[in-house]
Length: 124
View 1 (cartoon, rainbow, N blue to C red):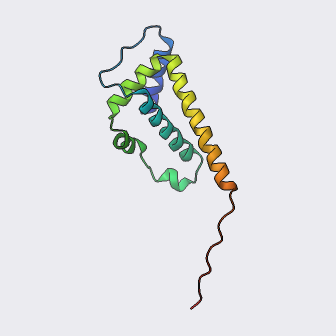
View 2: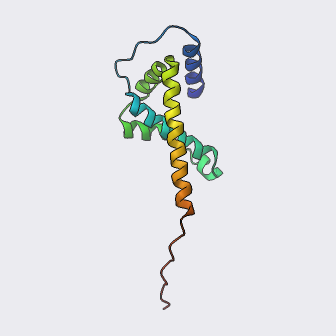
View 3: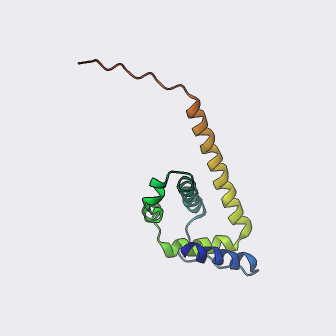
């Protein structure tokens, strides 16, 4: 339900011509990009993993509230504000996409490294 509300809010704002004034407690742009990055990674893992992960009902938002020191109202208002500025919002998502691509490249390079030999365990 929350996703539907956010999507509809984004759609209404994106189709409108009037800009929204910044909220009093606007999450700064760089911090908001970090939040979007973490959400993207979480959603990617959630959608491409085993049923055990998805059935665990892990909730990411309480963790993000604590990690970045914001609340749900502040996130909603900031998201609405940034979404009302389409070019800025798209630039933020381009930054997130580039960061994901860099992370994927790093992970691929780490996977290509040979695994260290495990030390021999003495037999008793």
